[in-house]
Length: 153
Image 1 (cartoon, rainbow, N blue to C red):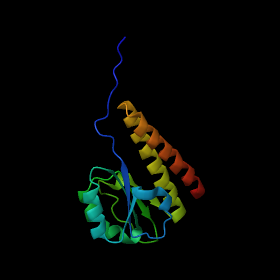
Image 2 (image 1 turned 120 degrees about the horizontal axis):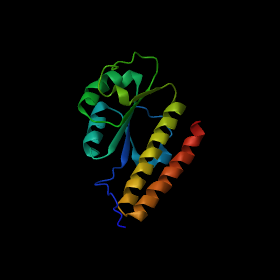
Image 3 (image 1 turned 60 degrees about the horizontal axis):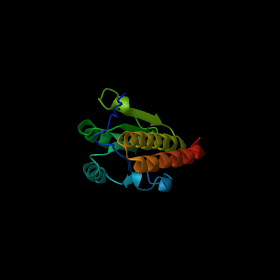
């Protein structure tokens, strides 16, 4: 009996781009997080990490200026920290990838669990490709982030 192993062409890593939310405790997430103070910084990061799974977090106050970028850029997930501002975009194509949160604890929990799933999926893809060392590193990172996310429950 011959078994075939399906390989994944290019397992992707994830990047979280945070638009102007400086007080998030993201140090533990290391280099997977990029803090962007302006839309221009965010555009630069999007160009630099275009081969990555892109996760964006912003406040409701910054969403209006982010909408044109979202309409032109493929993203995996958008998290909006609702600060009471009107939230536009419910008819946009990226809206089904949007989660609205109401405090930084919720935002961190969502970011951590999303990143944990990304590392887990990347590990599975590497394992399918026979890259056990990289797969194990991804799985270990996934568990580390899951452990960190527990403080935001």
